[in-house]
Image (cartoon, rainbow over the protein chains, first blue to last red):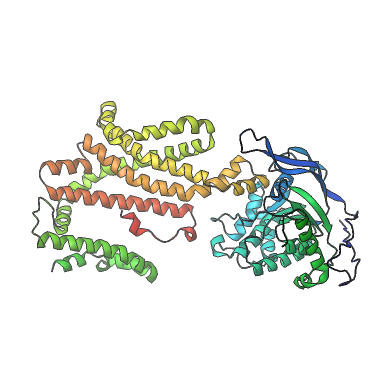
Length: 290
Length: 284
């Protein structure tokens, strides 16, 4: 399970932000865990006789074992579709997806998912909401209860086990959702804008906490966001997607040491990456400068 | 003077009620005080209006006369309450079981949704009160016909609310359950059914009040016992007090049964999730 994080190759503050002297997306020593081959997705068009709408243009991608992959893009770029495809909740129009060597066909349950909405069951307490992961799989509650409590403690919610979702804040609810997603120790974690509905401060805190949580566990994470800074802050790589049709515009290797403190976002090294992402958006007309 | 008579009827004067109240928190007591106060005030105004405007007993009896009638003829009323109560309860149970079952069937089977559901809806457009005589022809004047009428009126709201409850689950929630490897059965018992419970109980509450209506309608058409029968009988005797006594008793019965549903709801839904006691809504 040893993964090699890219070494820091450039000294802080040396590079000019305006220049594009990025290390090209290199071959890393990552062992591919999720493989997508010529995957595409098209939906039948709403207009009569309109044929199909291309949601995702055919693309290849690999997600390494233990990698934290951020996917950033505007709404409508198909990033949620991509996540659904990996989870097997939607079928690709073409191509093949495999996780750990197994081809995905139908809902793939050896994963943990966190959605933008916390999707907690209102009639269950925080602890019971985490344990639904075991119950839905037909696993014993008793066996998983100690670990569920441990996870709640780990996400900073010890003492809130008996609270109902409506008694918790938005951030706390999302933490319960994260604990639920990992109860069965899935090797792959998919997060679909998990912090999007939270206020900026709670959002930062959760990103920070999630980073250390991930570093302790070292599982493969696919993290979808529309927040550029969040994508760069958390990701080992950032996959930049553009809309209409949805496609991968660029994959950027984020060469920043971990654990990354929030203050890293003010360093030039960090802003170089965010500037680069913005530049890709500008090149594709997603963002327009004046 | 009249006022004091009404006040004497408040539960706080009753030692047993006092003992129960002692066990309640002040907040709960305050919550109950409002609806009880409102009911008492209504009786007070009623009592006052009857005397002030000198309304003849034949038109509108005073509450004191109604309560006196209930007190003195309690044997008869108690006797007549039992057949009505059994019609309501049996009718409601049949309606609850079949309403919930059919609601589930229609929300799960596309075939049932396309065939059974329109049939149900159009059958509801038949004026149920008007087919009561038909049931009497078919099933006689025994309990069967009355139970059927009560069931028929109570059934629909229960079925519809079950359907609505089962279908109101967020699609993302279903997605989540699929990703957790839950099959249709587990998704039903862990997600859909518990999610539908508030709706189902809302339907059961409406169904309960409908079952009371159905039982009375059944007794109007053909019966030799029951509160509905007594109401018609008293009406024929120009005994308006008797009419109002039966009405009062039917209302009390309805409220008590409504609360029984409310209480059973507490067994299924965590108390923390039920918002406020709706004592005031129950008396509607």
